[in-house]
Length: 350
Image (cartoon, rainbow, N blue to C red):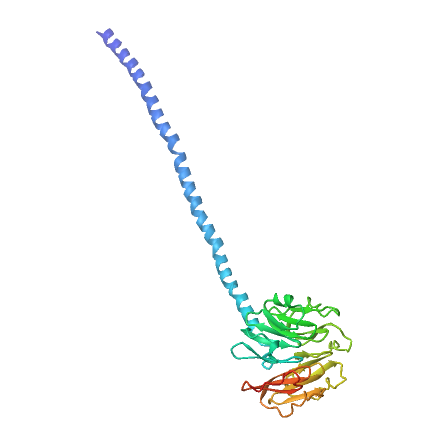
């Protein structure tokens, strides 16, 4: 019996050992396999959302400063340009009237142009804000472009100008001031009168027969071209607020209401040293006209045709000196003229 019991125990121990070996292998396989498959997954899923969350944060930071900068910068040039285009050179330099060599021209309230010796300006002109005249007529439009009629040299060049705020003309050249304070000149350049590309910070321009002038913001005068009559000897001038050029002389209005002149003085056109209380000036080929603050007018120079006979004028707000005549604008919008009327240039009473 004892032998039988011992044999049974031995068999049971062997069976128990055999059953234990597969159980451990199964547990190891079932535990290890899911661990290897599932561990990388949460790591990758955690990483991708983190990177995606960072991208919107970076885009938001980079875009936030850019948008306000664009919004603030856009109005600046538009407002600056508009101010420059509409800013008058002085309250008295209206540019509404122009006495040429043989005709007169003026701007009506509706922006059209009237003339005495009417063939000088086409009737279809519209939107004109300033005019200048000599043999022909130059019109500055509200949009900053320039139109010409009659005998004006280099018309195609002038027609391409843009952003212009002031113009003047003479027999050989036309000068234009841009809204940026630079200057352009069209026409002959025999004496270098077109060499103005380096000029900056200019606020007023004038064109002589062979000489160009530019008034800078600090009251100085720039010149280019002929100096045959000393018309460029203006380096000592200061505190100038307006300029006007005849054929061979130039006149400058100072802040204190006095006037200076340089150039040919064979007819007394430069005899302005005792003028005072002047608010506007205009130079013809051989005479000079000044407007006082009380609306009266003074003139000096050649009076062969009565172009200096302005002593009785009153209530004047603008003056323009032509070749042989003088034109005045009254505060009520009517015109007066004295001097040669050979071409009907003084017929302005209507």
